[in-house]
Length: 119
Length: 123
Length: 97
Image (cartoon, rainbow over all chains, first blue to last red):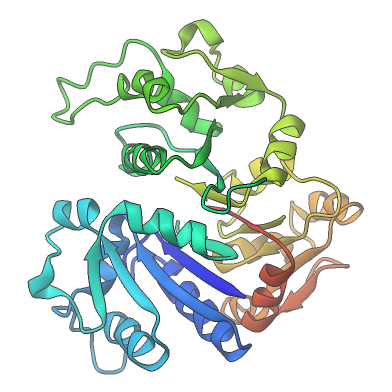
């Protein structure tokens, strides 16, 4: 099955990002294709490489980056939401990209499921 | 035959406007998906119904108002606007208080619409 | 249709709103702070019991464990993240938050 994920909250403040990641991992483990994680609202701040949490905590941006590199999951931040929040190509973590809401529409069209995580 | 490039997508607006950005960015998403000619419906549940309230004037709070954008949805062929009856009544509102024509639905009718959808996105 | 709920029912009316829109047979999955709803003997137990008459109810085990919730309302099943994925395989998703 092909699954798209829509993530609507930023890292740390809400559990949404963690649940979305755990869900993606489990879906891949079960043999599904996680096509893309689309970041919307404050969700776009999931992929700034300026993120620098304490060593004993998870690095959420790095985790998305790894998911992209290992499993080819597209990690996509909405351009309009990114511009509002100071996210641009200069700060993007490796494996992520900025794109438009048209891409989210494509993700909705080409996947069997679109699962939303938010708060 | 069903066009596989057109999905039935329901947007559920559940937040009041202005206090958070969810409704405004939800509306932006709806407009883009409309431009991509998806089969859209928009449902207002809970505080989401306040987004449609007449007489909003945001000039004093420094935030751009957008209630009139709901009136433009028709021009994008987004014509399926539904309001949850209980949510409206709980807030002491009637259809006359809303800036656009909507269909007021009982929860069960909305549930049956939800059942038909390919995708549901809450804002 | 799978309904997920991630809000504590004590703080937020998401749970009570969501259940108005359930069709019989629709599974409900509590995740994140939503799992507080299914702890046994709380004020929502009778509501959970009522929902269970027509709908299967699940809670995400890692979220229960993280919050120290052991005793669940009778009839509530637990799933791990793979079980969550399993429910998504079977149903379109309606995520309430």
